[in-house]
Length: 421
Image 1 (cartoon, rainbow, N blue to C red):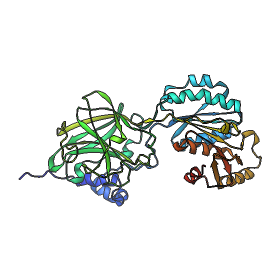
Image 2: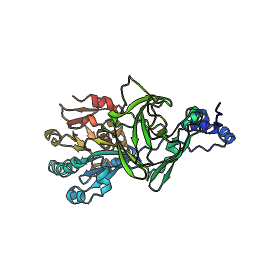
Image 3: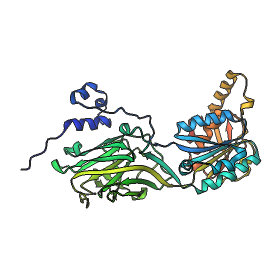
């Protein structure tokens, strides 16, 4: 009878603690010390995206308060404002860095001048139409939170002895280790902790840039925060020591539970992706063997993971004039008509009055495609409206008016969007 190799209880406990499967383990310092564990602190506040996505921001003179509010909000939503000058748009656009062009996520323009509005739209539209929308999810060359975001999930969770890890190197993230079939094991993997839900519904799939060792690996996506839940898997082959690009359409993902395919599945919920996983396994699916699998050392170097195939970036135009309603929105635009937006040169000298006005404006808002605009938007409210619209793909191609003082609170954004008629 074949003798089992000693199972590593400490690694098993460490895995459960890292991913919060048994929450008390993650905070029980005495137990960690007893078992000799060192678990990186959770960084749940960090975003999955290692690169903040640039958004072009162009506003007429006198809108510094609105632009400042936009800058702060864009950062909170994982973007970075890239300012353009209205009078020198052509020059500024030609001088855009390649990093901005490659990762461009949209544009926001604010003006009360119809002529200037047309010039802004016409100047920026060609750039947006030429941009194939993609969202960088992990740029491993820059991801400084790797250890607090990605951790190993090996066959130790089922009694095996395979061991792996992931570390940041100069050329990306190195997923490596030794995979063994002893103790009925045969897989090694690394997985993210639960992410704030990522909405990838506007994309066709995920793209990986990897350099492998000739093994066939798997990538899995999860749309639930359940530890032992359903995963959506795709296998990909690597070429020894060569960089390759792997495209995985969402429609090609196989729903699996513990390497068994599920006949009945609604498919991945692309609007709520919660985790990513990379795996080397002895098995493909339903007991079939991985044709390239060999026990022993392995290495997979990963440069990046991104979503690909989305529509061109959205341009949001806030124009306190009838121009927003008279000019039809292009397919990648959203036109917003507001009665007025406070400018820096017309701020009330009383800060108390300004705070009271902001409070009244935040009470309720209505978007409508049939009625005229009403109410004055403060810089902060105008900025938040623009960012909310940028984040709502369903509004692309629409022209609308904003009314304040009626409808729903701004935090009830889905109800505001649903009120469009």
